[in-house]
Image (cartoon, rainbow, N blue to C red; front, side):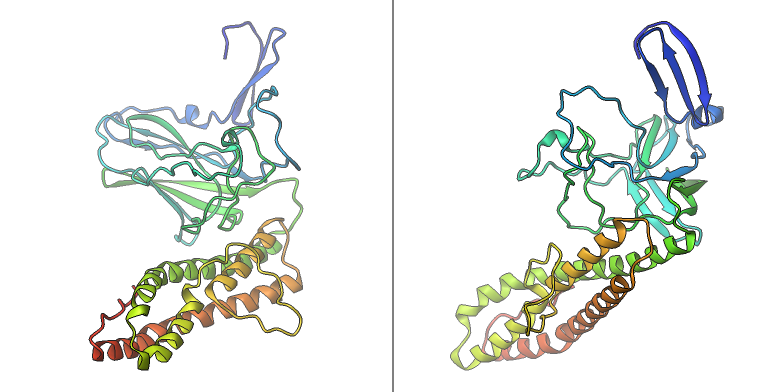
Length: 362
């Protein structure tokens, strides 16, 4: 802040607010680490400070396009659980940070070795909307890291930014569930040694939804998320086969073409591509084809509906979610059969014709 006259100062909870002479007021968010600032004996090691209670708030409530970049505006407090740590001069190698739930399960894991996301060259929004990527530092000194109170994101999903943007601070839409209010543990690992602190996450006090309903929301969101993760892994495993089949098709002899095309049709259920958005109901009189792409779209669309509000799912949402989960599990079971039965059978025929076999997906 500028060098100016301070006419009033107050500590409110974990924040310091100061009033300047005719220039407004300033807030220093979260002085929790200052209350624990005893680094004696830790200069060569590390310190993980006990985090303040985190509040699960839907931070950005803008309803439309953002203010123009030249519009004056203050900066809101960070939207997440603030985790402060100190690294001594002897720090070497990667540093990891894990968030574990009350049962010891890892909710989120970060590493200083994680690759930094690169800017999207085909970004469909102004670049100045986007929040800069956050990295976990392994440099000596004091650091503050923000957990967004969500589970691990689904890998390989292109960032989707909401139109309710904030200048230089717009995060992409989440692909993982909100962490349910309750007790968590933060674990920092430095030089092979782990440090842990408790973290309490509570709900936005303005939300009157019961803990039971929030647990119901989380249960269904987590089921959709788990199946989305599984199908994303399936699609990644199936993808390389597409090029092999395309390259092999011109070399297939006439007597094997029908068999090869039938196999290709089976494969298209798993490796057909697409499925990025919500899939609506099929046209009247048509039965939808359950493919990895279409079921992923249904899972993603229902997940977005459930996570969009802090309420228990409706009966219709539960029914649709149960159907999508069932279809995803059927696809996963069929994928195993495809890899262990259909693919070896075709490879045997290809070998008999002196043709290269198709690699078995991982």
